[in-house]
Image (tube, rainbow, N blue to C red; front, side, top):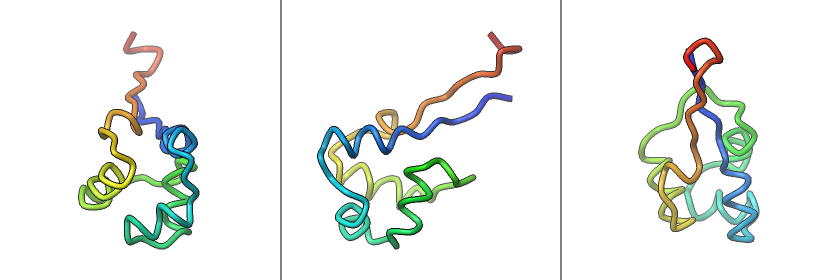
Length: 73
């Protein structure tokens, strides 16, 4: 089974926005946003994803990437 790779840290760096500022704009705890940023989550609510995309002016595909297993290639 493939996996989803989170690229939130890259988009945040491109936009020059820190965890605390983004967490405030999105309305989530900075601890939870930090977990998203570091890929230590197994699920994300669509409402949170929408808020992140609105705050960063990006698309979900800008912060998430699908990576197939080597067996699937």
